[in-house]
Image (cartoon, rainbow, N blue to C red; front, side, top):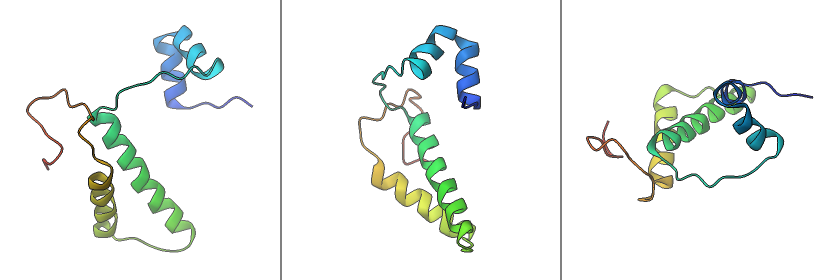
Length: 93
């Protein structure tokens, strides 16, 4: 069964060959993690926690979710994460 997602459709729209390499041939390309990718991962982890807990009838407060996010941010941070925007660093609000 074909899986459709925004990422897959956008990849195909950008370049059909890129789509083929990534989703059909499953060629793995090593990508240096940048700050945007890092942020996206932390947001997805937090949303996953929200929905998994909700399945078990646990309701998290905004404060609990923000604490989870900030803890994961600190725990997973490393200095190899690229930050191309010189005016910002990983500790800024």
